[in-house]
Length: 557
Image (cartoon, rainbow, N blue to C red; front, side, top):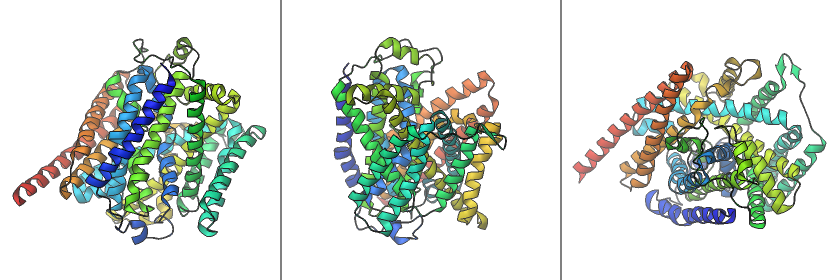
């Protein structure tokens, strides 16, 4: 099948979702109010609560939730065939991710920028809140620890990416000063910033940088992990306008350009999709498509981590409540566009079905590499760039997005620690510096405590990320449903996606439990069991809260 037809069909579905469905949700369900005083104005402190231009904030939000996940998930999931992956990305983005991301943002804006976990205490009860916060903490711990490992490995394997990756941080600091201190024109700053970013990518291959093979007993990848967490800790203490916003914004522009180049290359080269629509020869290592498809593709369809960003950093910066549709829902659409690009790169970027099958011999092995190889072939054929140059471009793009997600993740962990300090009246945790140290310390403890000197401990619990992350998404939709019922507004638009997602995720957790038991992976078995019990208890508490609301409404009528 022609990749152009799949591309146009996918973009048409995502576009219709934003202009039609999102408009309906914003007007009829969330009833966004332009005059509502957002927390960024009410609690403005110049550090975390900062009213922000919606285009800059969209860039921050989009790149924070993107990371490498919308590339890796679809790149792995096409092993079952490109049609299931395509349908879940498009339909999941329109009917699941958009309302989830925008809903979490709206709910947080209406609750002084608090996290969705903290809000749960007001709506359902303290026990549900405490259990929910544990799930949230585990998701953030997994994301931060693993992304540190992933970025470190990419920096070691691609020394040419070091200059553009770290140079982008310096560029972001300058951009922040230009926008907020110098009040320079946003368009001018954006153009110059993008030019600098791509110039750094061009310089990178000529100035490859490598850390020593061993320093203080640590191998190169472990040294990078320490440096990355030290940087992320410092970045989380800076005002959002100084680094987080401008870095994410300029990376968002870079991704948009990258997508345009990739999509344009497909339109010019008109490649055929060589991968099967439905793969009847799935490797023995692949789990069943149902329910694992729905947890393998998270970002790019729906991801609980997005709700943490929406109700964590983004809600504290939104200028007007009516910006929720653009930032939250359109941010999800951007994710869908990236996931669609990953599907096309990993199914149409190969010369033959045999070449594709050689890469997809085992489940989970073809991830970022498949995207880079396939995408580089498409860009080379369509745009005429050398494959090596195109591969460097795509690799740097993946590293930069993983880095922005890690930046936001550490800040979110700091917020969670501070919220725990408020909940349990622990003065030390209320401190920005102490909560940041605890956040970074827990990630490093997992990385090196469980992984030894190479710092790969985060990979130990990574098999649980897909199910835990999607479970978080389902629980967020559950909280949104409770809010809508209490307000007397239509609830079906969150209830139906919530029921489907929770059913698939709980099924996947049980499948994993069986696999961990048969393989003798007792630590993962125990963790899986804890997460499953916590989720069921939160759902039971929420069900009780919903019954109470329905009873009150019947009595009132």
